Image (cartoon, rainbow over all chains, first blue to last red):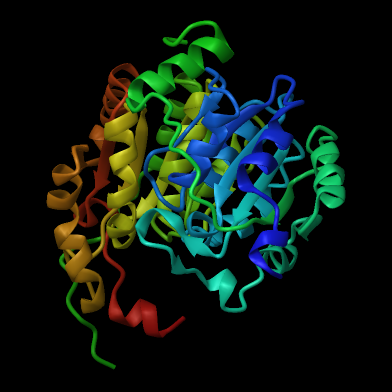
Length: 196
Length: 185
């Protein structure tokens, strides 16, 4: 598909978050960290600046600890590729409240736009289905994106949406950088006490 | 068939039950693990405990990331693993140092005492220095009388100071598998 026909990552993330309700959000490092922050910083966002390959597992731990809350991981194709085993682990645990979104521009945006495997034939949604996700789709347009968005709050997960987006040079919108602060503000907002 | 001399005799101990009791006392109810013969009994105890959510991982580093999510969600967890997997967690343990959250690792040792498989030695022998290099506090268990106290103290440090803590169950304590045992399976 031509780049100019693809969805914009900032629009996609804003769309996913416009009706977030009380969802708990975990991001991958790099582009999705900036995208989620551009849509609005929140204490119930946990934007990761590192730990590449770990965001989906942070989401799994959170979703199992808070089974009544929607948990949404928004990460990139490069970050997801570094933690593919977690798709098997998540499938085995079947957390109904967990959704994984891969913002897939088929490139490593933070390191000089090298091509990722998704631009060389790898289909992360197919991997998710093979791992056991009950719902895993590639999304190319707004109609399918809206259908996927509606599923996030249904608690029929785990679900995986691989959303194809264009290569873009969006402005950096950075959340707070201190990991301990991000963790404490999240626990304070969710649990009412960071020491709990 | 040659039997390789193992200096270690497998201990008769109910240490897995003792660790499980510590988990119960300290509300540790999110346990994740990779397959491990040394932890087999403890894994079984956790899997059959309806109050513990037990997750099988494909790789140890998944557990380090998962425990961040558990802590964000207000739960306490533990990661059960073998020394062979220590190298897999080092990079992800940087998250614990940056975000200051507890990672309680219970590690059974290979490659240090009567090991029959030399392929286990490099990672086993490097485990302590690399854990310390990334900032994890390391405790050792060498006798059955130390198990409950050490796991309790290690947990207190992990959850109160919100840091990575490793408890190493030595191979001398656990008992090394022998070549004969391995090949007769």
